[in-house]
Amino acid sequence: MKSKKQIYIALVLLIAIAAIAYIITQNKNTPVHRDYTEIEESGILRIVTDLNPIGYFVSSDTVAGFNYELLQALQQFTKIKFEVSVQNSLDKNFEGLKTGKYDLVACNIPINSSLKNEYNFTEAIINNRLVLVQRKAEFNHNIEPIRNHLDLGKKTLYVSADSPSIFRLQNLSHEIGDTIFIIEDDTYQANQLALMVAAGEIDYTVCDIKTAESLSKKIPELDIKTDIGFTHFEAWAVRANSPVLLDSLNTWINKFKATKEYTNILKRYYK
Image 1 (cartoon, helix red, strand yellow):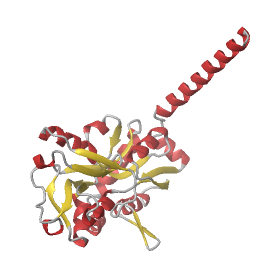
Image 2 (cartoon, helix red, strand yellow):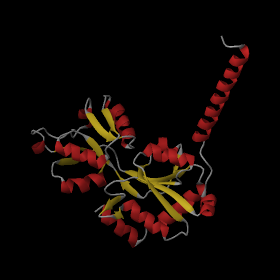
Image 3 (cartoon, rainbow, N blue to C red):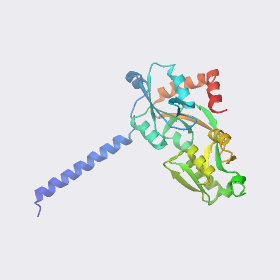
Image 4 (cartoon, rainbow, N blue to C red):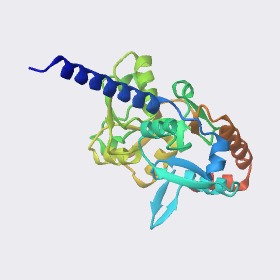
């Protein structure tokens, strides 16, 4: 039988472990303070983006993409070196932003009120909208594509895990007063899910119109004519406590969007 002293020591150790775990958790969830001054002093801007066929991709050992070229253009205006990471999970990107792993999430993120409560968004880098990706009737046993949102009730839509489109689909479900079943896929991105729709492996997914138009030119099976939402702004994100970095990025974005170089980049990826 354990002595009172042993029990006391065990309790003290348990309390100490719990306290350490609590402190670690609190520190993990507390956003770091790293604004433009700290970034300039370190000489490195930590950037994260996602791999996709328009924003950032590798082709024949060459990196390309809309966001890649914007970052290349931005690099010309600063002596700060860019450290670019790739992560397709938006949740992990935002978590890295909070902890200081990243300073800038350079992805095409639809701006919504929920995210604006936690992060600062730059000026819009592009306008976009969501569309339903489904098969045309001739590739789907003559079943006509959905055109009315009410017909999405009880349908199952596949989206990439923690995609911003989930927020819109949840709102749409409330709007039509019926359940839209949403399955989050932690393996495939929107463009890959669209290929699965074309192959008949799944029936529906959603995709931004820019990506959808690019895919539909190559894949005749796809129907992308049904809008899921209105035109929205997409932007990059920084921490809420990085106002100087935000202001610097906004100044550059506003100037760059007025140049022919931006227009050419836009045409190159969003014809």
